[in-house]
Picture 1 (tube, rainbow, N blue to C red):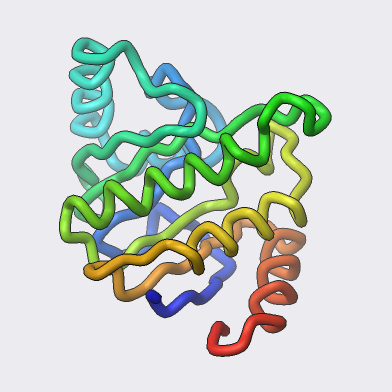
Picture 2: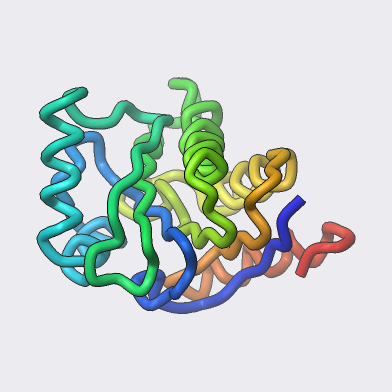
Length: 175
C-alpha cells in the first residue's frame, strides 16, 4: 500500500510524477481544478486531450485518461471524470470510486510512483464532501499497487482538508 498523506494547497504546484485532474467528459477544460490545470499546464495538455477526443470521443464518467503534464511540475496529468451528485440514486458512489480506481490503474500502468489527487466531484458537481472523501480514501487504501509509493490528497479548501485529516487520523498507519 502506498504512503497516503494530505495537504492543503494548489495541486498545479505539486511536483509528483502525476496529478489527477477533476475533469469533465469533454476533456476541454472548465472551471475549478480542471481550468486551473489546463491554464497552468499550457496548450500541450489541451492538444493531448483533443487527440484523445479524436480517438475515443472524450472520457466517460467514472473513467480516466492520461496526458502529458505540459508546463506543470508533474510529468503527467490523469484526467478523471467524477459524477454530478443527483441525490445518491444514480450510481454516484460507484462512479466516483471508478474515477479514483481508474486513475490508480493508469498510474500503475505508466510506472508512476507518486500521485496527487484533488477532491473529485465536490465542487460544482455537488458531491457531499465527507461521503466523497470516504470513497476516495477507501479506494486508494484498497488498491494493490506495485509501483505507486505515495498518494497525496491536495485539498484546496479548508473544509475538505479537515474532513480528510479527520478520516485519515482514524486509519492506523496513515497520516
